[in-house]
Length: 291
Image (cartoon, rainbow, N blue to C red; front, side, top):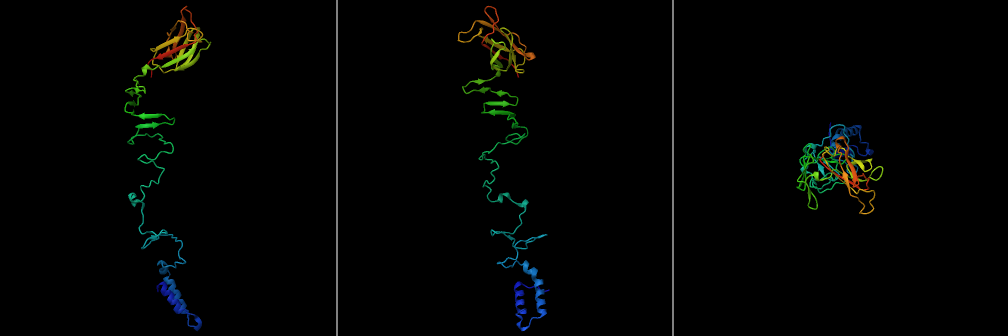
């Protein structure tokens, strides 16, 4: 076995296999040069010394392990990779362009990028420390839930039980410290028709006519604790209301309280002659304690 370089092979071919005009080429000369080529082909190809005008290798495929003994791999941009890059060994801090903000799909911790769509929390909480079951949640109907206390402006604190500490301050400087001062229900109705006409109401389910001048106001169930509520009524005591003077002196009786069975309060209008009157203008306001 005789391994020769590419240059030696070419020299041997030119020397031993010259033009055959003189008849000096023997079979041994041909055979010996072919043997040299076969013996040397691996060395020549493995050396990487290929013709640059017509590259010997365009694509390299290997069914087994491919090993670069030295030098590494050179890429089209002229860079050379001489060391294998193992994923577990990559130091993120050494990567260039870390501050380029290339990933615009992520939120920035400094808050400089605005959301481009709605943020879905699912069943998760929004809080400052990632704790479970604390902070703010939003359900699928858009209702906001608070675990703990919700402080607004440092003056208003809302606890999970719905308690407002310090009351609610209004823009005119007044405040509401209790809902006991707020009406639980109210209604304005016309009692001259066969079926009373409710003009406006709050927490009133219906107004039922019992007889002329006698009505029953049915309240929305669940707004009061019991029958110990305050009812304030007023009526113009007559069947018309064309002018501001269209009223007669009368007494409004609010006697029967049966809210405990899911109803409300009676409403009766009695004029000075002792007759019950189906009046045009009737008002009722109810205050009381409830959930």
